[in-house]
Image (cartoon, rainbow, N blue to C red; front, side):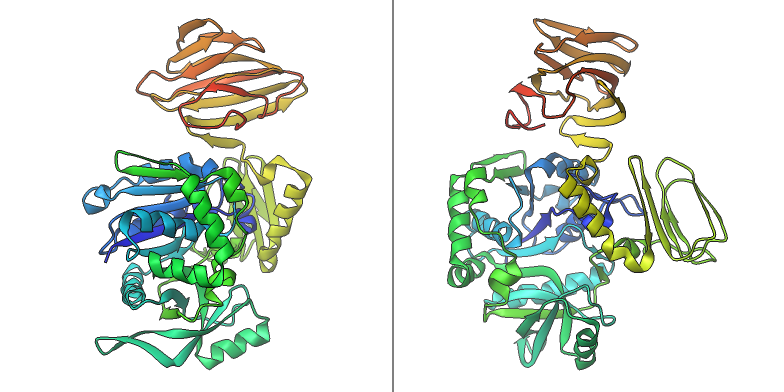
Length: 492
């Protein structure tokens, strides 16, 4: 059978603020080995037998960062030859439309019998062998026409996960071996008493949010149980253009049509209603890394139970704390059971037992329109990165790094002028009617209203300092005339 691991990469990861932001969400967080959760998900899926291509469903704004992550883990052998497909959403509409769009795209190119293995980009699975065995069972179950889901054998009465009740009297068998069971029901996150009952019964597993099914069965079941979602998604996909080249294809979903698709999860829209649900109970070392407490547990503790990651930390009389630094020295005295996460523009301090409540800080920042919910001080762009060094009344100073061969759009600003100083490399600059080369320790001035473009023609990264001056310095003061990356004129 043709197997297509389909990675869902998005969300806000609000419980992992301030490291996770709207345009740098949880899948891009780096672990101790410096691989991101997204990279681990891709490698895990690509290594499975029977895989014919990889697909990622992500927000259009995260596309180039996703490509950068995949480029870092470029592999040799069979995995390197796998086609990579991208479905790019203009906005989030939850998992049901995302999975429906993926199934429609795959059915159109690989056929209705092709199997989708739906994986979350922000989960961690430590037992790769057990994962491969669970996938083999799910593939066999999906081949019998079921919608297979992966149920994690609970390690305790967890209230932060949904549960799946397996019907032990209805096993699904192949070659005399029980592969899984029909699903009796899905249960939302329970209170502690209910969670204890579920675990004690032995019939319930945690809902992992991973699935395996054929494109055809998935589409038929959505037609039966959530036709409005399927119809609206199909209309969107049919209007969206597929672009392919060099082993990579992408579909940018039409913004107007996709905004009309009902917002719903695959669990609510389909899995809880379908009679074809099946569960594969498994122990695969799974974690959804749902809080700083869970992420901290991945680090080795010291003799006082403290878990330290990143940066320089000095402690005195500190125990059972998780401290994650960045560039600054962190000192702590006489604290216990505390989470400290330091980033260049935001600091989090929380009790470990209230790690789940970090999401409320994120929600408040978003409601206030505070930039810290959306952006880091360093922001990834298709051409490289920029870092805001300082902002004051009427000025902003940035460090800009442009990848070799990359180019910013031909653009113009109404309200600000810019002064560019090259500190490493060489820049090709369009400034009004002029085109020039600007070398290290040279500069150029871009008046407000001038069309301009910055390009790195060299083989090494270009680093420059940009000083903006003007009455308004927002990132939305930009008019694009030409862009290599297909961004619409009003995108920043």
